[in-house]
Image (cartoon, rainbow, N blue to C red; front, top):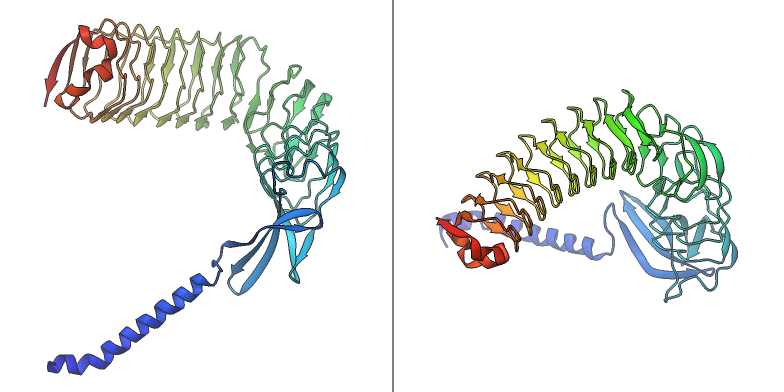
Length: 458
């Protein structure tokens, strides 16, 4: 052994020993069954007092926290056969000499318990998961403690027997379907859950508090008698479906919820104020008489189906601030002839202009990289299209049914074209495209390939 190795041999041996000790300690920690800072399930399902729970322990610093979450009974029928009448959920349960506070009701825990008539929830409860009480249609009363901070989608869907509004100091969940007349919501409510007023056939007027800023979509399905325009200082929520004429949204509004103007078939034009950043999904779906809309330069995103089937809309000016337009945003706008696309847009999403049968041309910005599936499907008047040099992907049936296209150039940047991207382009006669796609001609162009003269580039 050289002199240098002999000199440093003790230090090297010590480092090796320390490394092995460290690895052993790490292995012991992770094999101990605890996960630092995260909830660890102790039992898959435990029956305590005729109800079933998931029991958890959570390690935080030097503390061990124990909690219980109600879950459904095993088997196909779950609780549906044996829960009858009133149910009082305890604030804690004991198991192996440990007390577990009941803090949650799990997914589908009491779903389809149609024989339940009343439920009392404990003040320890913090969350209620998806479909927890779905279809409990004979349940007439249930309290909602202020301790509950989170309620997932559909937690009380199908609870048609409720006789009183369901809410706590922060969250409004449900107005009884049998409610008739005007309703003024409680002050200090911050969140209105999806479906809160669905099927309230006799609701005629609604006032929401200015504190409500987290307002979910899909609120008014089946509210046939609701005649009031619903909004507060910052959120526009609902326009009556029989509104006729033009409308200017108040300047203070920062958000228009999904379907707020949806199915207003006789509204002619809408002006949105500066400050709105998102036009949400289905915001203006099937506004059949709407001929124009002013989109402010503050808008950054347009949701999927936002203007779907606005069959009288002939022009859309998208400001440069718009970075994303969702799937099917303008699908079925059969009179749309002109639309400008912002220079920074990266993708043309699926079905974006599907069925825009009056559109003759469109300028795709150089910034676009992806043309989605069915993006221009059945744009039967589209005579010319220039695909920018930076596009690398063209989706399934992207230009299918563009019957007026006569020529097409696909740049060398394109590395992927999905099946039938150019099928049913019956007037297409000349196509220039990269040589790599030569074996796929029939797959990409379908029967039209027989009438097309192809020129291949490197």
